[in-house]
Length: 383
Image (cartoon, rainbow, N blue to C red; front, side):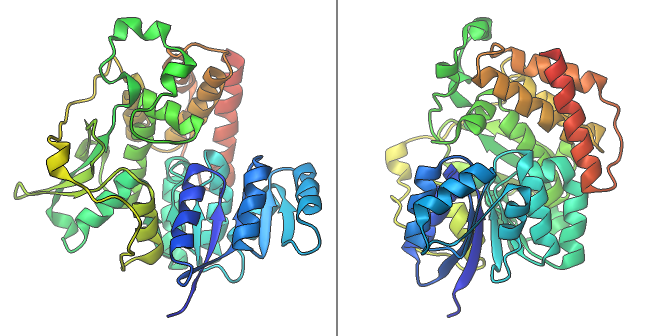
């Protein structure tokens, strides 16, 4: 059996770490040829030593020099900046690229990988949120496969297998509801950073954990689902499911609902994306529904989660609106993480930026990046 060559964009993040755990479990199936990281050089060095890629990239030239010093003459080639990300994304030997860089920064290298004919295991939802029409057009033009890695989209992908598109009534994305699903909205002005980072089910990076608390993460997933599966926003629902066992569902026109269930661990959707259409054995605990006892679902509350409504509104507006929404959210979350605004300031800042945005239809990635920069400047100005 041929070994599949992999490039990982964002290897030190939670998705990157889980991807490498899957690779380590199946070393006879996968070989990592390129990896990129942000600023966590200590972990990156450990990963490089363990997986021995041919090419690695970091954000800054200074970090690249420090990395070369630490790895010595036996280390891989080290590059930096956007050019370095693109080099890893388009590595000649890579057959599939795991796109796991957080935020809009993942768009350019992911698009470069598509244009280089690489299949994509997509964990960076912002790529489709900001440039869905352009990305899906490129996927078709270059004849590559796009496999969803988000647990929700992987669940829908699996629940659609073997069924006709015209028989689908709606998609149902599940959400944990984060730490505030039952908190009194009257107390939201007192939410601290520690409160918002205390996710009950998932261990994720800070940005995505805050997005889960506000449910902007689910809003972005609704937009992503629209592009992946071709359904309008009014046929994509969100259910809060605190146990995070049902990862998402598809409702069909005959009333059947098909769901994908599993323990909450990202290795499952990652492995499925890397090995599709095969399934790989994974060292995970079995799902014991009898021990779990019950699965519960509830409607999201707009008072608790205004960011979800903002995302639906951006999808309905179309064009550049989702790109502006995403950029404003990234600035707002960063401001909250750094103590510049209170928790309720996140949706307030996003809504103010969106109220000033004039929707256009981006014709290129450069157009998307211009919208992204406009929204960031506008949000910074408001701050």
